Figure 1 (cartoon, rainbow, N blue to C red):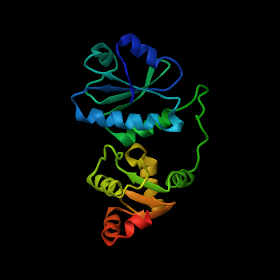
Figure 2: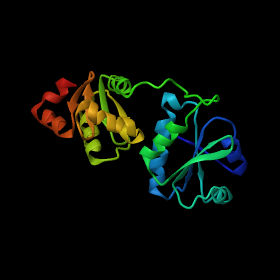
Figure 3: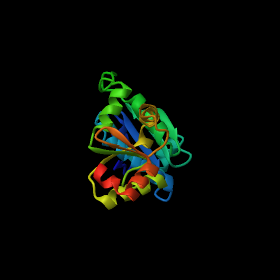
Length: 215
């Protein structure tokens, strides 16, 4: 999970330097803040963002910092480099947050931190990341829609190992996979690189006894 900033001196320590820092101004009692924490946690685990600092501060506890950066409501996410705020996301908007982090993620020389691979190459790589790959809203622990939750429950009932990708954290993948697979909705389940289908097809295959053997 993102590092919790304890006080204003800790805040200054986190945002200094040429490394990109993504700070979530949060409030524990606001449900949307938990969604932002989940998105930042997912981003922090992706290889292309290992050079990015992800942290959060409780906006009400660090009121002077919130005031300085015009934080009017939580959640607010501000991106920093060299101690200066360079970008901002108001509210819980996973796609916008992901896009902003990607856009501002540069290394110390201001060059992209890794060569940009084509979207098609990236989609193929994700689809083949595991023999059974689920593209869903949220993750298996905290699904973000009923269809994704039902799919996770079906896979859990069968007990098949699988991996997942949260399409809410990457708008490029979210839109690109619809075109690539010619399948307009989520979740999407892939087996050995081939699209099996969405929830309706998964339910039909489960009812007919085909799903377990297919997986």
